[in-house]
Amino acid sequence: MKKALFAFYSFMLICMFANGQFQIGHTAINFVDSSRNNRVIPTEIYYPAVVAGENVPVAGSEKFPLVVFGHGYLTIFSAYQNIWEALVLQGYIVALPRTEGSLFPSHLQFGNDLAFLPKAFNELNATSTSLFFKRYSEKVCVAGHSMGAGATFLASAGNNAITALAVLAPAETNPSAVAACNGIAIPCLIFAGSNDCITPPSTTSQVMYDSLDSQCKTYLNINGASHCQFANYNFNCSFGETTCITPPTITRAVQHTTVNKYLIPYLNYFLKNNCQSWFNMQDSLSTATEVIWQQACLPQVNCTAPINRTTKNITSTSAKLQWLKPTCCHTIELRYKLSTAQAYSWTNVIGAVSSYSLTGLQPATGYTWQVRTVCDDDATVKSPWSAKRTFTTASNRIGDEGTDDVAEQSEEIVISPNPGNGKFIVSCENYTGYSIKFVVYNFAGRKMLQKTEPVLNHNFEVEMDMTMHPKGIYILQIFTPDEIVTRRLVIE
Image 1 (tube, rainbow, N blue to C red):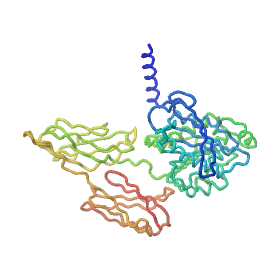
Image 2: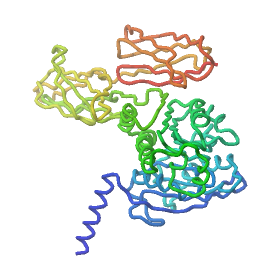
Image 3: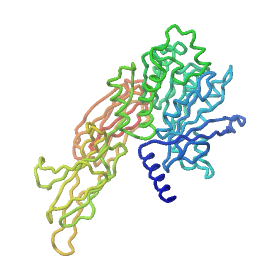
Image 4: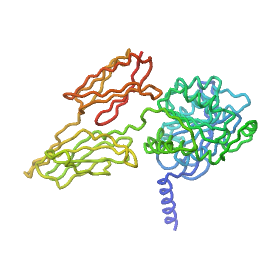
């Protein structure tokens, strides 16, 4: 009987984790920042757990990303239960520091606390006695509401440990969060409320969005939303809202649902590399009526063809085709044909993952094959076909072996001088394509230059003249047959 119950319980846990649902564990840690006179940072931590409770084991065996969340002015951490419940159930660790809750908080110290916690979690991840030993993915979003949202910009300026930002109704801080935005290039998602009288969008969040240097920034102004409804009810925030001329016209529950609709896929993409989540977020924005939105992003999902393509186990009638699946991949399409056949004679295979075994082949015969990546569930986003590979099956003679005829070609793209004065030379030898396309963006996502050049004899050397553009950092995207290569250009 006990064995049966244990088996049933184990089965239920497996099903629960497979469906992406977790229980919520909780622990409290007083972190100490020795670089600031041993400043103590009491922090409430909620995490995916095997069972709900205090200091219970972390669920499963995977590594989870971290969301560090900063509270609003005079708002206790428990007001953000809506945030940690939504995120923990999706597989995130949520850490909420309880510092700077006084009448006269230090925004700078609070920003430094938010910046410190990812470093503290790195230590927990490496400590064998820690609850989070080898359970933190080292991907982190710093987030917050109101004062805490403004402090995220202070925490993020020049901080390489932070992956992305997400802020709710950010308030201006001292030192200035707006000024800090000028030095922030990481992805940022900003929520505002159209009926927010505490941090009016036109003078706070909109200005911050405009000031960001982020390679991908998104601004969502929720219709009818208020400042305090981003959190659960709490007296201090609600009391401050009593002077509002325009009350909210949507409920707190609707406001929370709207935040989760966009926040969760945003985090799933930037912290979990889930490309479909990015497509889902863009689909939601394209038909959105609950928000007025702006977005300035360099192309986020590089849908690239599989690399490291090889042919193994070649016999007279069969061969195994292998490749390395890209990060963004829903499935793989394969096509193959006799090398002497016409271009329209391909046989297509849909649904391969990282290899495919061909059977029923002809002996002593050459075959050509290619693969490409399908990057979304709807099969509307596909990479170019990879460069062709050929192989020859073995003959029927004893001891004869088939051959993989084409070695993987190296496409090392060189940019020089970089940094430079604005004139760059982009070159490559042993290039597999017949043309090359370049697109240059500034950090606001605006296209600055585009050109396509023919490629002869498998090499090219192209000059890009950027001398008419201001000094700074630009993003160069190079479209090859197999992938989209992204590089930085620096004009000094």
